[in-house]
Image (cartoon, rainbow, N blue to C red; front, side, top):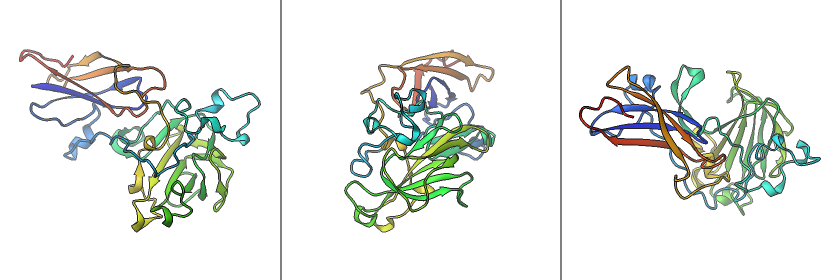
Amino acid sequence: MSYRCVGIAALVAILVAGCDFDPGQSDQSTAEDTSLSKRGGKPKPPPDPEPTTGLFDPAPAWPLCGRITENPPAGWTPENGCPSDRFGNPAYTDGPISSTYGPRPLVSGGYRYDFHRGLDLATPLGTPVFAVADGEVRIAGPHSSYEDPLVQLRHFRPGAASCTAGDGCYHTNYMHLSGWVVSEGETVVKGQLIGYTGESASEFEHLHFEVRNAPGAHDVYSNWQRDAVHPLAFLPHPESPNASNMSVAITDVDVSTASNPKPTIQIEMPSGDELDLNRIAHVRELAETASSCD
């Protein structure tokens, strides 16, 4: 028999995980998995970013330009745009990421499970936002399909001059904006200032960033929610060949319910490393007399 303790995170500092005692099963859940289990299912871990060579700009900027406002170059202003030496450069990311792509317990929804279709980047209200690649502005400001103002850009495939020439376009969404400085139909270049961050209905100050990828030649302009893909398949970020640079420790185990102990797992890693970490699984064989999963 074994206990499996699983958590999901990106740029993790502290990870709270659930611990299922279920011999012979490999289902995974987090400690807050109450609403989903009532519906008879458990969340699947987020898919790993898939290779996207040739689909997207090979050297994009991050939407906050590597959080440039926290340590701007001398004389720099947002109107100057994101410097080109940050394009495609994994040393300049917008980490830490407060919420990654994939299933998550939604705080503003009573901790029900929600599939998050992008990245949340916590940042003060009014932080400048930049185009991650050359494109055309499709939406700028409020839109009936979205709760808050946004900018949506349409991008051609590398080397293509239209959506039909490249087996479909891809779109990027910059959501919960407090302001925007572009107009629908305008052409923008990579790194150009397009707006300023705002807050969601829960008053969480952040940028929600999405990449929506058209499925192919049969639907070249598609940018529905179903088309959302993991942004880290597109954005540059540091990667290491394995997880040997991480330290993982179980700091506490709540055994108030003996059949369902809940550990707190602390994970530490160098700052800025492994943004695409999706999950940590802890499995340990226990003696029959064991009563916890520490």
